[in-house]
Amino acid sequence: MRGSARIATYLGRVMMALGFLLMLVAWDGAAEFDRVPGQFPYLLSGAIPGLALIVVGAGLEYVQTTRELTAVRARQMAELDAGLERLVRFVRDGGGFAARAPWRSRP
Image 1 (tube, rainbow, N blue to C red):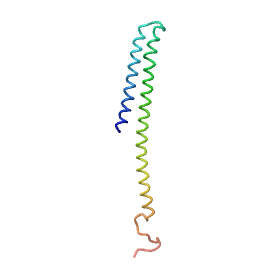
Image 2: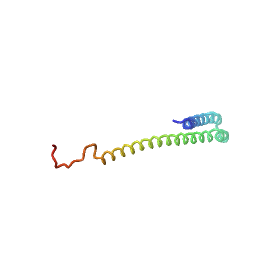
Image 3: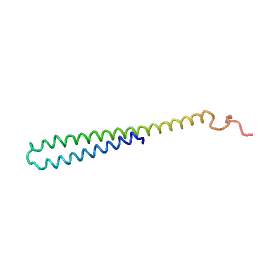
Image 4: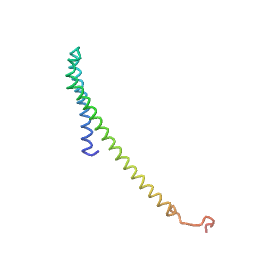
């Protein structure tokens, strides 16, 4: 994994952790009030931004993982293509055997 890819992966994980922490703090603050109007400031200042951080962090992690898997698949396909090209050349050249008519017997 390259440096920028590693940074993006860690950044996504940190964003998700901060989002969960922010939601936990908002939940703890809202739990002090038994009326909904008193809970709204915690919802607006903690829970919604926390959820946004979680979604953005998870999206960043998903995109980075997809890029990584696509790069691996591209390398595998290149190896498969090279192997098929070698196989086609081998068969086209007679399979490594001298060309002879099948009805002729060996001397």
